Image (tube, rainbow, N blue to C red):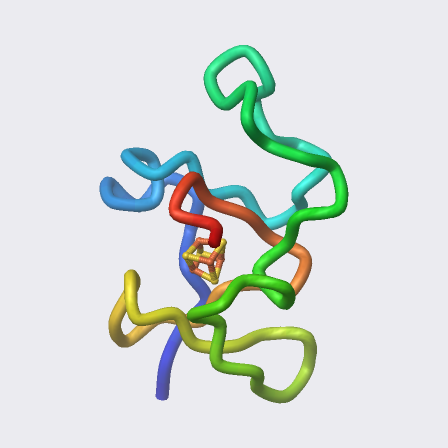
Length: 72
Ligand code: SF4
């Protein structure tokens, strides 16, 4: 079973992943827009309970309301 991606996972840190898009570090990621979230990302794979898969983080689940710098 896939586990939720932790923000302190090394790769999550590299991509600035957060579980809530409102907590993005705007100084580090000035391109971040408040309405961006994993559930609107082109590579998000929708799943139950507000979580889904992301090919960037194999074997993990990201939060629908999360964000990382690979958002597209
Ligand atoms: Fe979320 Fe998209 Fe980043 Fe994956 S690539 S963590 S779906 S914003």
